[in-house]
Length: 217
Image (cartoon, rainbow, N blue to C red; front, side, top):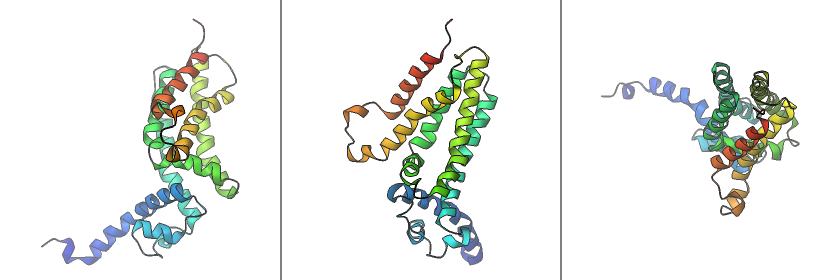
């Protein structure tokens, strides 16, 4: 006989341990599909396969769940990319390509890519969450890329032109691609303006940017 079947308490504890992750995963997909405002706590519970009151055992409210989704999925990934950047000993251009490709494959292609569109749509309705997202995701990612650019400028790889503005220019194609994927692409999947694969488009955009950044040899 299976040991777990003899011990309901063990089964309950094991199930309880995985519930927060299930709740966050369900919340992420609902936030992206329905928007933050339209998603209710009972919707999250139903999608996670738990009772209506279960999310409240782990999270105070829907805002708390949203923050946990961001921290568990985006903030942790940013920390990983920051560590990668700190350990990279190749060119800054190569590092930017690795980071861009990695971010798309880990975030852009998943439901997480829909958070970008969500925040643009709901920022003014939920300013406290907008501030949270800015401080936890936008500002750290900007500063991380800024350090990469400054590294390239310092070693003569890149031209010394307004690094903050360059960061915004580097990020814009990624933001546009993630937003498009969760908006127009769902309605007009065969748009001729997006015939390239998202990753190919992003790589082309970055190549054009890097061409403009390179110093004359």
